[in-house]
Length: 203
Image (cartoon, rainbow, N blue to C red; front, top):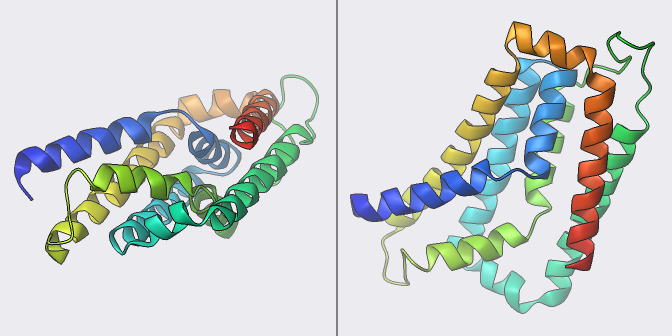
């Protein structure tokens, strides 16, 4: 792959990763309610979920998803249900008295990894996005090395971006302030996830 083409691909992936959405909410949630490691776990496994769709795209599975509406809808509605569940959990979080840190359970690393992965894996639109994106750079005659570079670029950029988010927001001074307002952040996150789920359902 030519450097100019790779830079174009990387730029699009960076912009996509930086766009606020449910993935950002999940990574922040685990960073604030857990720790820096929780945020990193969520980020790494989110990147794994994104990479799986990238691999499926180069293998041609994205076309199957596109041409099979029931499969696309099955994954999409599962994703909506998952978002609604996360929203419910966030909105029903109990807190202590005002000014104190919310009384919430520390998420395990396994839970952070699971939710980070699922928020990506239950988004079949990623496959369609990669289908449109990759078609601009590869074709049937493209070497497997070129396809592998694209997959690693997509997954790597996504993982690094969200790991950066986790590292920045887990700084001692910032995390202390955020944890004192965990209950508010949880409610805002719950509403945001609910709005996203509603948007996906009616789109």
